[in-house]
Length: 435
Image (cartoon, rainbow, N blue to C red; front, side, top):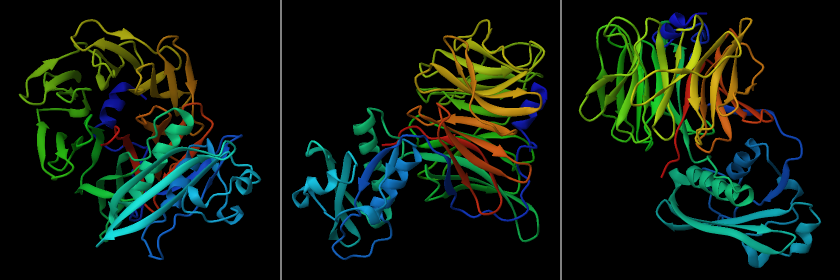
């Protein structure tokens, strides 16, 4: 596979996906396919709700979030010795016998029409001390998001690492309509696949979604005009703008960390090169100039450099260039194919597609040492994207019959799959932290 084909993959359908014969369901189903040994037990008591029937089991969502990390093993509800709703109802001696070091209790109280107060407390069982606690005011439609925020607080308190459950994921689905024609949709959902929202539907391919750094907009490539055009779309209003519709290729948008610029792959001057556009003024600056194909740029978190894919050395490899321009430096040397690199939030590593002997897997490259470690075991993986806390990588994978989204921890010990009941899903992009 050449970089020319990689560039075209940004513009058309690849063999990695778009193969499903049936309509996809909106909500993705998440399944843990591999967990880490030695996960820490944690007791999460069902939240009291004053007898009200609520559309979301907040405690269950918190438990599912923590379990998905592979670092926590929620105690089955049937094994809990009681159903306390706050710390005043606790006898820690009962909970110490359970063997769980930490305990979460909470209650949901009506505050008015459709409004609720959600309170929780986190305890160290063996010390008999409260570690954290918070109260949220939320409408019924926001209870799942509140649950994700609670899970974030608990995760950070117990691990020292910021949680990313209350983030979102953008992805592209492809299905068949009643007339058997292909339908494409750009979707945004919670990080666990729930609460999907359709950003755009089209009979033509949609590719390369990329989040703005404030999480308010997405850039993407659409073929609805019969050719590739780069758009940005505001998620709250739905309003969108054409960013690039030059002659030839318009593809692979990537936001700068300050949100003021977009890196793009354009062939307006005859050869696919990396350009940087000032979003406010549409001023365009060419960053690379080489007879090879340069594509798939990604910004370093400090905004001082970018990496991109190029075949200037004969095969697809990753190169790095200053955001001010200048000579590019090759950074990958292992394997005959390395492409679609994305920086980790701390800027110390890259997630990329690594190809050897016809298999394309997700790997991590340590930039300081040049060490490359393969994370996945499947054969057709694409589009890696880091969680904003850097702990997990989401990517697309295909088994030849359809595509799913896969999530793997950066140590390779924990794996999850997000799949539709029918249809195919691909091109994931994990959002930044959201307000």
